[in-house]
Length: 106
Image: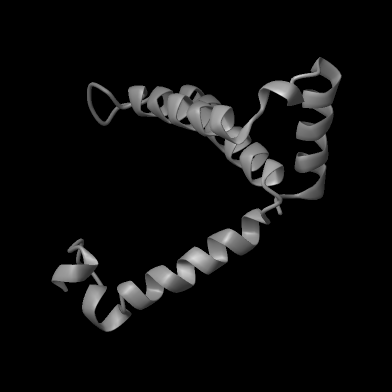
């Protein structure tokens, strides 16, 4: 899981506002997508960006990701490590190093 203090702070923030009832997995997934679009908007017109804006939008994306994982009883660290293991098999270093080719074309 994320740092225990972060998870506890998020849980407390949601509980204090009685927002848990709105945090269905579906709503949290929608919120991740919405916030990811706002993050992308920081780069909409080119490579220049404002670090504070990116930081704020990235925090929103991460917050909703952590809340969704928590709602589903998933350990954030473990699901990332599990996915990394799967991806490592798809993209072995000897074939993928320095290439952006999709795994089925390596």
